[in-house]
Amino acid sequence: MPTVAEIAKEAFDAVSEEMPDVIQAATLTRTVQGAYNPATGQYTTTTQTWDCRALFGDEKAMADTFPAYVVGPNDRLAYVEGLAVAPKEADAMTIGGQVVSVTRVADIVGVGTFFSLIVRNV
Image (cartoon, rainbow, N blue to C red):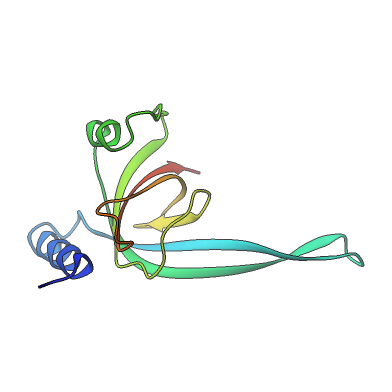
């Protein structure tokens, strides 16, 4: 039996073949705060990135997936597959060259491999 990750990959591959401009190359970027350095007065940070693919949904799908969320004018829904980690709020993403910030995360089937996100243009 195929996994959710395999099904999502197959679906994205099929859409990409039929409509090449719909599926976008994407990168999730997470910056993690580290230890405080008293000599500099700064915290160290570490940045990690993960490649994935994404496609944008529509406003109705946003309301259906996140019913309690008030959609702002710069918010977009993105479906993401191919990540090795779960996205978190405040992560940055680049989707097809567009830089966005993750504001909400939903694990589509609860197995940590296929996500719907609300992202905001930065």
